[in-house]
Length: 422
Ligand code: AMP
Ligand code: GLY
Image (cartoon, rainbow, N blue to C red; front, side, top):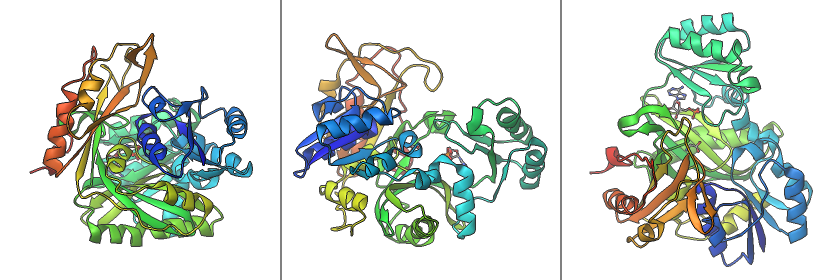
């Protein structure tokens, strides 16, 4: 089988490594990939946005199966186009990907089907939005309807902050069209968890859990980022809680999408708040999380490609995935200044030495190669991922890997997984 992987971050490096190792796969192409992915795939110099060029390349290379990593091409309908061209594709079509692409669509779907989530209303008009924020009271959350590269959720501690967030979206147009409609919702208290499931249209199976660390500094301080590190499994999502999440959230959501003519085929990411009243949805994403994908796939105890293929084809998903009992931790090394502005092209040293540490692999997120030298090429640069007997051991191993790597301005959190470790 010839496989095309779309994307070029740490999530896609983890996917590339797993797909290339599958006995079902003869050739793997990645568009655009990165220097880490190049170890596992032939790179095609195409972004996820150029659907026409991707389709032409997939046809030319005789691709049988495509896996789309990021949300932007899914929300824009890349999976529809690949499937229409006869290329089996893992990842929802545009109608189903709206579960991530439009917060208003996702919230309305949850409301119509009784799926637990924060109380909310949708607005285009600032005065009504300000009135509703007052009805909910602070803290309150203002969200852009459309995609905003992870920056569209504004958690407001006070009503003054909420007014400013509303004005930024609806009056100053800071988020462009993405913010022309907003969702205002109740602030949920509890612990956040990431839960992943795989759907084939009508049916869905659980995959695994993780916890992400979104803020840039230790102790959950500073601005939100795309994710500074993650670990898996996440103990509070034990078998009983996973069964509850499947029953109350994931199965009803997949059934609702199927009933509304938007059958979902692909990875469903439920961002959850484990509240005193039970698990509630913070958001859905139409893809693997990054960095959650890295520690989860590090724990895969069986080849997941047959399952991915079955889901993409709308066939029964069997056998169930096997997960190693060990823990995995991923620490993301970021450029100085991220999530604000940062420089790129800075030489990176020590990746080989890090990978020589027991249980450590280094996944590339924002890297490039210049004259044979690995250099930084993004905010999130490398995802150092470990496997250990338990969370404590996996943390120790991940940071032993991190200690080997250096680049000017390098920053990372030193407390990934800490709160849950003994
Ligand atoms: P999102 O972009 O929806 O993933 O939100 C980014 C972050 O904002 C989440 O990871 C939460 O930490 C926080 N957040 C979003 N919505 C809520 C909410 N309703 N209550 C509390 N925190 C929230
Ligand atoms: N780790 C958060 C995300 O992938 O959206």
